[in-house]
Image 1 (cartoon, rainbow, N blue to C red):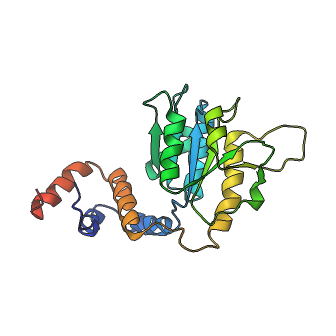
Image 2: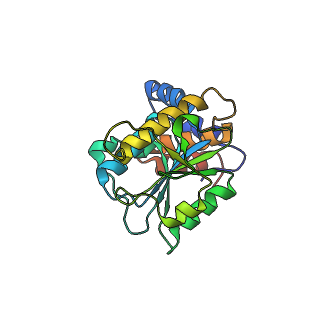
Image 3: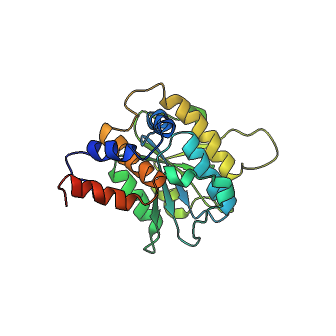
Length: 228
């Protein structure tokens, strides 16, 4: 619906249908949103895990989550996600027999360094991982981990130090630990924030999620402004 010259007039109009308290919250949250760091989930099948990861992404300011569905459909448990899906961009790959390859090739073309969370002979401690360029953090399925495709295409591998008898953390715990380390580093850098254009686009989606019958309201705006 929006015209290419900018979304500011539409956002201003829609803001009249949102409380000042919610608008203030949106502006507080949007300043911490990032696409410098993104999360990729490959074949996650347990709704509890799928939902917990999304909730962590929202809490840490990750705007985009890339979801690969090869054998398992990504299912969300609303009691765990607690509405976090309303505030995130979920990009799904489920149309081909090579969804993992398609996802990773797309991210690489956008300039992301592909980092898989998997024990590997050349892995890097999560605390040592550099994030000076855009980074896509990849998590594999609960039982088997990342696929062979991801293993071959990844630029690097990362591990979380463990000191007990268990061989690995639950995937939702792993995601939270990794994001906590990386986002802390990220905020000490510059240039990780969304661009002004990206902020407008994200805010528009948030407004649409918050306003009842927003389609009709947008249509009215376009008619009033002569854009239809």
